Image 1 (tube, rainbow, N blue to C red):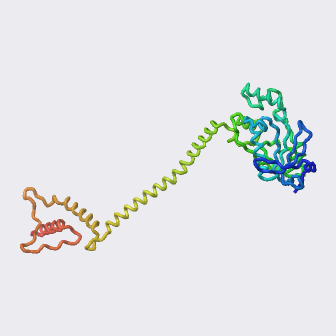
Image 2: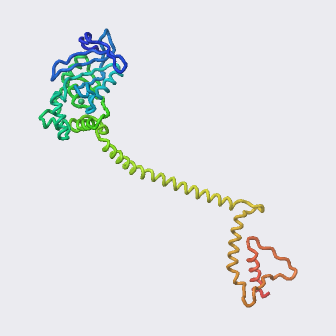
Length: 336
Ligand SMILES: [Zn+2]
């Protein structure tokens, strides 16, 4: 636990924000382009807020339009709000507010840059270049020194700007970057996020920086891509399941037919099987039937029994017509 610089003792007071109170103390950052202040938030010890290593830190450059007028044209106001919400939720942290308006160019040059952007439909980085202004002339060395003076050796830095990380590390601080992603509140704000990504390498998710139209087309392409992958992947299991289903139905049908064929009748045989077998035999006899037909003589009697002789039993497994035909053929052979 590290206690902040002694000047916090003179400035520590309560601050109410979003219905909640927190303790804050202020120390100046007197040097640099326009100077600034460090606001130290934390639990009060003898009126002075206490912070510790690894606390949340936001280094914020002034934007009069975004911070004070709540303009929707940039993300400065939402970033400041989000950073303060996170610090307040943790109950401790540091907000370093630097008077580096217009990315260090000042409010007048910022206004000139915005006018040039409107006139030529270009982003402010390009308009600064046309006005021969530095794209970003801010510096963070004094902020880093202030954090060291507060007794910190490691911080969690709330930023998307990689330019803020290096000066702190060079000052001997261990820095863990915490992303600060806010949703753009207007098309101009979205274009500004896109420009910061493109020109300064800010670590802003593409999703926040692309336009809704681009976003829809990207989502559509993503869905098409997903479908092109998912359909072949799903087709094989579906085909396999279909094949298994058809095979199951075929097997079940076969078992039902087999069961019907094997179902015993009252005589201990298998009725459907017998019927099928008999039908097959009748068809064989019907084919052979013309051998025993003589058009001139009419149908030859196949009854070779003597008068009063009882009908011989039909050999098992042979149809009656077939048995009579065999008997008739036997009589011809032996001249009877
Ligand atoms: Zn702004």
